[in-house]
Image 1: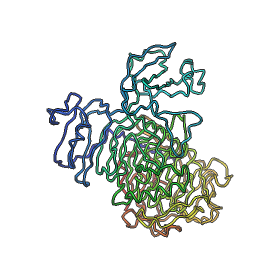
Image 2: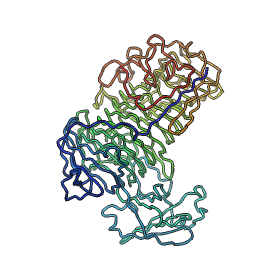
Image 3: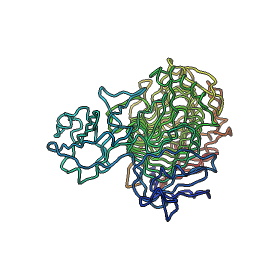
Image 4: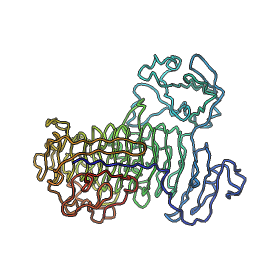
Length: 632
């Protein structure tokens, strides 16, 4: 039978915005306003920052249509979930906040090359064109990179390594990117000069912008809690590299705080990271660069700075569209614990590939303790989701991954964590250098790599807390795989530790628990597996985009009914070997996978393998947004 499943991915801006509770005061901001005004709707303020200076817990700042070129530094946060400070775009109005400025008065140098000279005072205390990208786990590929950028009508030009590359305007000096338009900058004691290629146009007749601000919305001090940022277009920031051991700064970021809500925004064009939920900075950072030992010391210092569930994390990042960030769409070291990441569309991450390093993914978290990552759509990213160190109590559920370098990387985690009801559609699906994971009702349409990590000791915790229970290496295995679909590539050969199906785990130190899995087209089961179904059929698995809709074409046969499945529950999954803890919800209650990818109720006695319960053969229009409710 052939099932055609249509996934309609709605943009964040089409979603209804939640109605804010009654607040103590509302400040209005408009491009026609004046900061000497009272901030009422009839007498609005001019700048968001001026409104931020006045807002107190419980207040709302409503920003009206227009482009605001400022970096917002909220001087305070709210005091509780009910006494937040809310920053919101006026309903139905497009509000852009940019870290860039318009630049005119370009002078033609030759052919398609133009230049502009600006006094350094134009940039104030921060000049992105002398600000080098650097940090732990960063690899510059043998050349300098700056946090500056040049945009032509909203699109990024590419920074050249040398001025001569820009002057070679036919692209010969940069043949791999011959069609790209390049820029280069030099900063002396007085001026900043930028050379740029504008092929076939006069830049003074177009919109040319350059980065001038490090961030767009970011507090300069930690512990500014309970802030909501809603409904904006946020773009163009000269963000620095965000290594896990240093302060992590994003285009928008929470800066070591608690209880932010970042929702229904469009976040794009960050030189490094888009949304940062990461750690504070401290004077000891980077003293043990690029080492596991250095990060253990970072964790110890984080405890001194209040790293507990009472103080840090519990953020909600939902229904945002995040794109064109060269490091990560969402990044968070330690500060993303106890958070909920739902309904986001993340795409085109690390597409220029001028530099590389670790910490690069659509979502990259260290210590995603009790964090829920559900209903997100991640594609065209170097790596979809990277859970690095201390993914414990983490749940990855009902996400769509495709066209990524790899969909999921779980690194040196000890469990328990749960990965359920996901569509992994890239050629490479899972890199598992962890143990104690539970994988249920997923579609794996690509390769899996399994490997131990004997050289690094990493932490595990008591249940639902940041406290350390111990450190140990990863021997591998102790995973649970129930009711998944695995699709091969027409061959039964799999070179351990990489291949299709669970045979890649045959040599791991700890055995797997499994049942009800279905293997297609050469994908191979685990040596000691029971209850599996192996089919030589090559099912059609194809994702087609039609406008805002993604149509999944999935062709299977009777094997879905032949597999011996049971409902996946806390009782079935048991306890992770290293931590000794059960697979349960973040509040400590038992879990049961009672719904599928679409929220459809599962058959409690014989659930269908894979992400869809009894998919049938009819065409359905499936709205991915809204599939964010947890199972009981």
